[in-house]
Image (cartoon, rainbow, N blue to C red; front, top):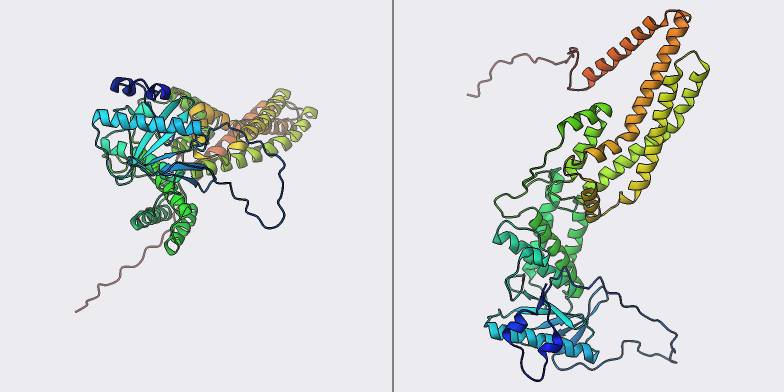
Length: 492
């Protein structure tokens, strides 16, 4: 990105040339300022408490004409200059050195506008950020609710995701505008009443969509929408202050972020949360999926389905992820307890005439189920209440270009998979023990095979009765009542 060398701009020898300014201005956005990345440290110390009632407000400092100081509801100090091009900055302009740098930067941008003969709208605002001897800026228009710059820029230069049309880009620029209003609400006049009423309408529709559909694209669930609506409606009956403007702006920037991600108003708008609209040429490995499905008794298929439903077009909804993680953790904890208690039964087979290899196999499977449960719980407990961004970063890290979520789904299925294999080994030992007792240690194999066959038939019958995937085509019975035909009634 380009930078503005402030010392060169203020040279008393000659004004900077148009070319030197054009090649030195740095552009930023309201998303990429240093607001939450400052590393300054405070040094508290003891102080004298004066006798009697006294004022403990910050001592007034001198500011040049047109400048005023404001405090954001979060506590951030910022400064506003009411000039031909209004200016806001978080630079501590009580410091003369910083004030001088800010003024130089303002003059450089004004000179740039003059040289390039740019006609600026009336209701604009300039943001200035000082970075050492450098300066960065952006402009916002209060009429169109857009953020803009004085040069042609690529979206990737400004940290804006790829777009499909100018109107799609406009949604991103409106999001940036509302972020600016959220950060600098105190000096502004009251927002137009329509701004609040439109926002209430958006949230009301989102609430209705959640209540009547399971696939709403709005990022907040029904309970959260209800709380936000109650808050916004309370602003109708009170004087609009910086707190109301800050809250309203924050909600609008979230609305426009949601609209950008769902391609609101575009040809291919996302109407359902699980609707994929982006081109994805990658395909999962079918052979690997079949293998893992058979190995895990289709447990991994369930996890693949859930993860694909959560992660659509690189979008993750926090409430969907949190519900999935809570359910997964409950399942892993249940198999943790089961795999801890069940191996105690395997110890009995070491003192019975059974196959010790099967006893060792089942004990190994139960132990693996226990260990995998412990590791999965330890790794994912911190993700149970993760934000959407944290969940997205995690899923981006575990997703494979070739196998997508198949590997992580298989790992998620380990506790249940190994527990089921352990149960198979344990039951096999039961059959062997039963066959030995029945046959008296002689000719036990036919009895064992017969018991195994009966068990398999029972499992297949259970599958046929409780699932749509039929194996034996066992007929099912449906009870229905056939109503007698009633003679037609004449209404004449």
